[in-house]
Image (cartoon, rainbow, N blue to C red):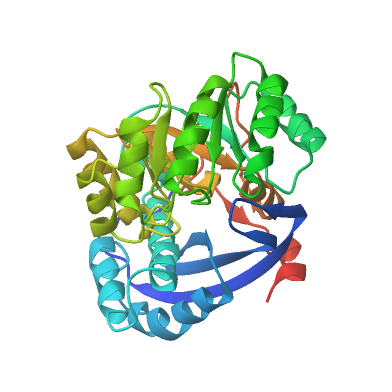
Length: 367
């Protein structure tokens, strides 16, 4: 059990980045990549160490080191909102979207993990669960995969009890219907099929594909057009087939972004990523916005981080079990969980996020 003192002064903050090659080349409708960078921060206070992480870039780690370490050491650790505001002020002239918000996200997560450990609680208990588990959707099906690789992956997830899977589309539009049909065949009618274009289509293309995808049983169409095209998303939501949910939001870095998307009635389901939108503090703010607008919420990537958040956020409906991140988290964190019957539950018996970074295993990936 940790201490229940009402105050704890931050003794130290450290940060490192690690670049891990993908198991296969990966691509979506607009991007190709062969490696992923993990940023890990540790915040120490009251004899405990909080762990925060995110998928960003080495520049994010450098910003944390240069801007936030001097700011945080000696400050009150439990006053997480005050620390969040301090970090937001410190990057005022650098801009909130992008690297700056990712840096805030990593440190904010470490502060929540630290506070929970000091109180002898899991993050799920500290936030206050709204549910004991959250459904997941298996997410991969990259456009770089052959149809055989796509079917093998999705068929395997279906056999493991996943009730939802998501694939990438948009890189070669002329091949998308065939790939979607093959994916649907591999999982059967009892598994929901999602597609993600990552903004690769024009509005007219997206409208046409929406009808075709719905005919193949697709129920979720993510970023059919650019997430910056709110009018285009609204057009797809209004004109697309019934039963096909339009989603976006993974590139939201602050609450005004999400508010604009909701006010434009651009999505049926809003996505948010705690590694981008300001950490656990920012994610729970997005959840409050979703509740105010009566729009469901889904998390983007980083499954081990989002388990307690999605179990606490009342509007949350499911969590993205992204192949690349799930693989890294099982490689480098003790306590990373596997879905059971298509859902994930927080480890209430483990303090904080329930994760321990495998320092030795990670050394070969350190930047």
